[in-house]
Length: 372
Image 1 (cartoon, one colour):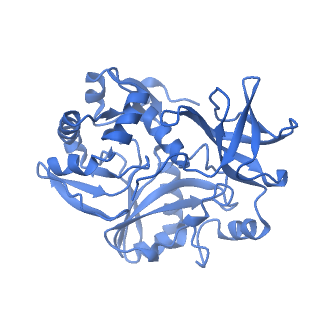
Image 2 (tube, rainbow, N blue to C red; image 1 turned 90 degrees about the vertical axis):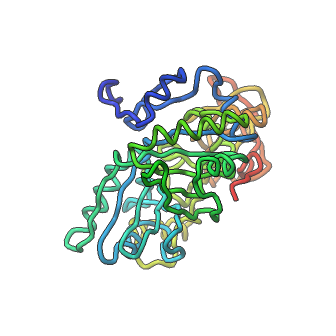
């Protein structure tokens, strides 16, 4: 079911996107920019790889978990081990269901033992908040949906630090560390993370300062060959890195074991959502496993297209596919049956609208990462 246009939520930067001639589309219940009139997906992608791109990702969710023992509570719910980090650090983690599927993947900001700030995916925010609220009943822990309190701006690329420094924001942060700052007297949280594989930052400005901050960042980016970038480039960039997108590469039916996201699971923890199912799957071995596919023929793979062995036997399915602007060829992420006995370096076929394209199984990333 799609959300009617008049019911879509609007980013605090909506007017700026319209002024830039953005192609807008529904995404996660929000109206968001896919690309901009004077650039396009490829140019925006290349700006991020070579200079800097400024993304509006204000559709991402925001929620706070507060109260005595809040950090311990979050650690009992989500997959990763929050005790590995402390205040001023952030962590990628998973909210799983009882069968081991992924309700959402999200970033947890460790503020203190009594406060954790979460950034889930837009469409899944309500589900995550509901699960946490149910688990918190009677504990004194408060779960607050703050979806409309903050914007989110991603500044990504080799010139991202210079861009932030030019508007007075901190840049000297370790990967997955964050700091609170200000812009025009209003709060901005700055985190050294992103979804592109480049050195970058994600900013959480107060809703009312998001637009002037965007304007200032974009002015700095324009001066050094950067530009505004939409969700189209965000998708090609993350696919080149092999980063999972929830709803495609991770889902309620695709576990972290299958998606090779076991590194985000604290396997020695005594409690987290879906623990028993995930331990059982890990011990037995998954029936399917995520791989990258580098298309050797001309063509672009897309989600849900069949992956076949050389004899035509269906052995899997593409979960994400695109044309790589960096490589100039088709790439994909796919789930392949482990019973097929195939692995890195083997060739398979992808059914692209009736054409059988040859693709090589690889381990992402498809291009070099500079995230750290």
